[in-house]
Length: 330
View (cartoon, rainbow, N blue to C red):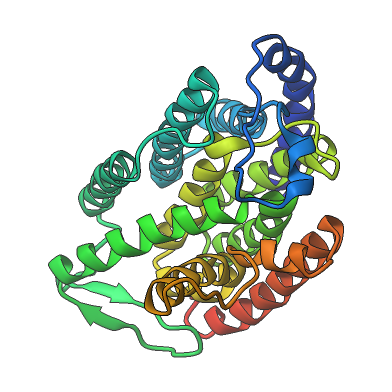
């Protein structure tokens, strides 16, 4: 426990220091955010705010894990980190093209989807080779919250299910990054949940990663709280999405994402519902703007209120999830 607590503190200190170094560099490179023309008009003042701030907590987590290498026995944590870093690389390419060509869109949707699917397949293969994916019967366990015994699923079916969940989760986290401090603050209780669950399952090495990321995100919020001095960009949000879903699969409980990732799911569902309704009604809308955090903005909520309410909802859902998994944690 002491090692995990120290890792969280180290993640915070490193992220804060990296922020002091990174922010002037990003400003000098003019790595600024372009603002969507269809977005809220008051977001125009955010144009030019440096992107790729996610590098500060990514760097902090990476350093913490490398320093911990000499004490780590379960290398599953490095599969999780590698998976997240690959998604961060996809996000970095997206941010790079945004900055280079001074536009809001970087990689095409097809390019991002293809790269994300490739990363997901590689990660699942590593879990399979590591013996984490299948049980002694050659089947995959699918644990359902509040249900003691898992469902056993054929590996092929499980892999398709897992690919859908992984890509969906990562992009849902990405959509949540639309208001100052929102994505980072919502992810804080999720990291506490995964760290606590890993400890309860005796996977102390795995708990180091969410602990270090928790500290890194706390420090990052000093730069990203409204009014934000830096944005995490797709570099940061895809990394967070990668960590969230990779931890869920490494702990053998992907269905728990429905609870701990409730806000992420609401964000992506609001976007899908808005799009489908718009197409079906030839221009009508259910929400004032999607994803749903923009709907609340357009309804008069301040950014700070959206962040606090959404993170509070996530904290409650993580608490419910904890009771949901305690029945099958051994």
